[in-house]
Length: 315
Ligand SMILES: [Zn+2]
Image (cartoon, rainbow, N blue to C red; front, top):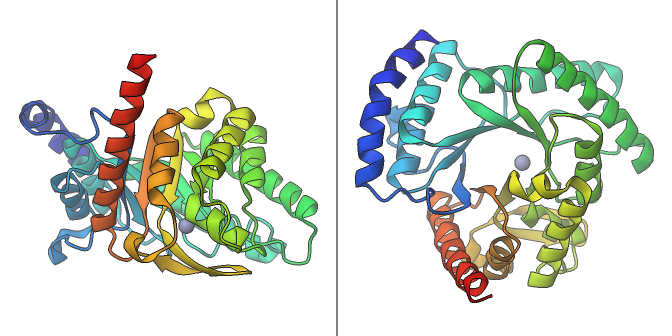
């Protein structure tokens, strides 16, 4: 904690100078762009704090810490990430471990719950505001029963975090396979029913989940955004957390992520939809070539956004 505070103070002055001199990519855009996991071009010795700096050098402004196997990080390392994020004005989120299932049997849920709590506690120390996680699978339950069990467990976890003073938003993610919890409807409903919960909308997963090539047009993307606005009100679109990538899939859903250039996903239509619908928030890239595509996403969005602004000005 102290390390972070000590480093942050002198830097806030320096930051102002840097910000006024350099072109700050995000300051003029309603959406911050970044990567899930440190950029591939981060120097080996840099760690996650080095990743934060690398994000800034790339003119990006968000980083999701990929704690997808386990949460093993010291308080000192968290403080370093937090200080770097403040210095470089990079928004931090955490991707919690994969092995969490809100609908698991009591024993597995006990360990999943600890993993989710650990990600939130350490993430908060590292300056994260949002904790993304995969909600789990239906197992043998009906979707309605799985939804209810998950909702109650989610509410208990957010109560626990609130009691500990850990001020983060939990973000269940839309998932790419039909056997998994995490339809757009489910993540919206959890967000309606549980305080401090909002969706992480992975649009590539929704495209793969459909499994037939659908959910890949401007109209379908804007319809999903409208559905979010109807379910959650204005804040639904003004505080968005988005994962995006190309994706390979079968009729059953997701196989693996692909680079934008090698995938069928209509990313230009997608970023046009975000711009036209006035979305505010973050987009995190998950393609294999990571930061290269994050920059491509930001550039594509910037053009769409400039066009939307011009159109609005003309009335
Ligand atoms: Zn994920």
